[in-house]
Image (cartoon, rainbow, N blue to C red):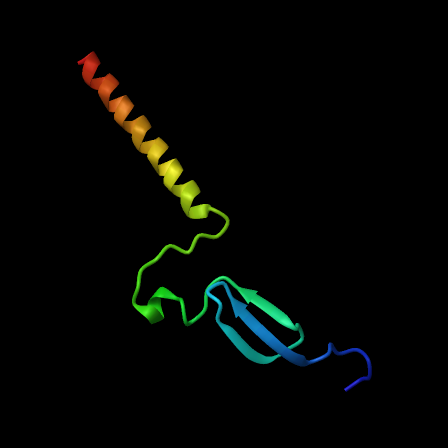
Length: 81
């Protein structure tokens, strides 16, 4: 290996949003995850929303607006007939 061109390989912590901490080695000291094997629905068998930056809420709001617009259009169409 050439000297002084490779990144430092140090002890690292992988932290999950659920609070789980995994010790390993990496070129970064801390890695932060949104979901891990302890809280992932596939491994736990529990269904839950993992909301990253409000994306689930935004989707549900768009869906509600779309359904309301479709219902309104259907009501207008019924009145015309």
